Length: 194
Image (tube, rainbow, N blue to C red; front, side):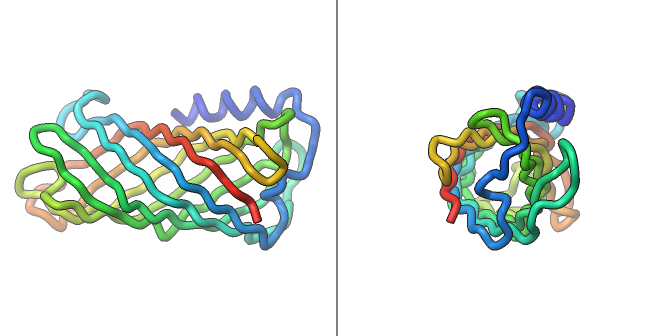
């Protein structure tokens, strides 16, 4: 996944002309509803073992001006995710909700036309209606993710966001067993920059 994200970034940056993205100004707000789907493994080495659907709202704020040089030039954005919809079903359907209080996103300044890449790291927790995965585990799990994506600007301060991340979920030994979900998450969001 990391190599795919880097390949996507290099493709966009290779022929890019340097432009200041609207997200690159210190103090700008970023508000985005999003949906995502993940597929991964819990107990055996198969990326098709478990599927998770989520939906939420990302709220972020640019905390630095543009820094760096060349293709690395960009700005750091801090944000958080509210996740009111978390659904997985294997033997039974499990619902839940979560919160990512830490999302750090590096918005690259280089753009190719309407395309601007980013990378991010995030983490938080999720509470579900039943133990996840089923068994002597826990209904509360921690989440961690890392990856990147592309903002496709539809207007000067609005963009469609397509992201790809590695996603990890585990209970950190809150339950008797601690099987973990490791998989790939694909997301689609729409951003308004203020």
